[in-house]
Image (cartoon, rainbow, N blue to C red):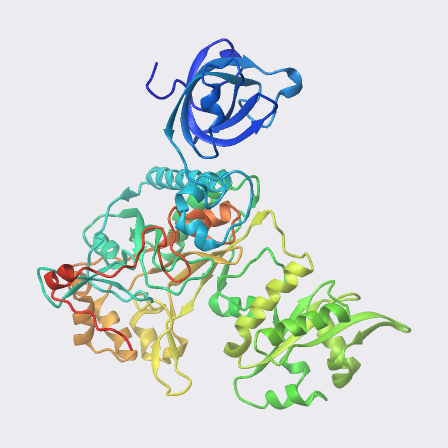
Length: 591
């Protein structure tokens, strides 16, 4: 017999009754039924019930066992009495009577229990992550993650992509976040950087003549943490293609993602039609460039109904350039209690409040109610109702000003309304491509033009587009949103040096600066660069959605905490003096 096991804890069934077997695993829980000890023995694959009574040669040793001790047992497979069969377990028809036992690893008192669904502080869970990972939910999440990555790889190979690895130690490259710098021992005073993404390398792969590249790539960014983003590192499906248009990239990645969500979505509906929505329309309709389309609410501009109206706050605001009034329809939200709750939500978000109108049955039929309705009169409220296609029992909320000052709050309000009114479908994955991103933005205070989005995107219209108003220039850049999360980001690249130099010149960077910062890529583009484009899909977020988790740390094996600390390994840590001397570095203490 094998030194440790003849079967796993998920293998045994009635066909093994009468056999002598050897199992290894952890003591999941112990139950003492008056001189008969029942132990749930757990390994990576499942759970088997093992038992011991006074007839067992090792009964006294079994009595000493505690939760999470790692043990080996030898025993005989017995059929359970029919009344004791556990249909929830694959091994629920049998049990193993212990004849011999060896403690492979005893456990001290546990800082968190593996059995059960108790909640523990995040710091405790991360400090003892190896115990946390033994819990069923996290075991399932990590198995799901591994299976998703394997499926993605197979699907990419099946459509003629080849996997190549790019460097982990490289030069600093602006990708929208802070670099992690690595000091060079051989070149004192100089630093490498961990790649924020393989962006430049994958473009260079296209210049090198490879046609379809992909990689499950680690990326490193010093970002502020949030529920759907790791503060240090993450993994993405990185891909690039030559001789393609924007639609070609969509056509390549959509079947891969649809297949993965169909395979691992647990029966949830996967939308097959993925609309393409312009960045500006997404901001107008949903208040975000990563809309949750499970929520049917679509915001609208209603400024004309308030111009010259009796509601002086809105009427005067509209006299200022660049201002507008937007409405958030709220079907079935037509009660003063709900309207007051949403008004309080807006105040918590830092706004004075949200105006509202709701429609109800009156003495003479349907009537509009609320402070706004009284101020603007029945004709205007009726025009608003017709535009928004609302009726009795419905409501609408209003935000005003320059769109960039309230869009984000409006988007969050839309989400809250959809959730509270049960309008948002739960068992569905709703995807949308967000396209036509503006390349530039203007600082409202100093008027400086700078990049709003990826500076390496090809401008729509090429060089001719850069001769006009920079704020009207759109890029061949795109994101894929799913259920309110950004899953994919990509672009058709700017592969022509003359267009790249012009694009950076508009943002205040001369040719010398571009060559200094991106010399490797710019030089390569001078030697016959093909048109190319691609995208990257966030592995962690994909798995988070498939696992139905709200926090990305639930699908990462060893995540950092909110302060970008590894409590288990003690990182970041202070370097040894010898290490600093070898690197010619000195730490300056902060006051």
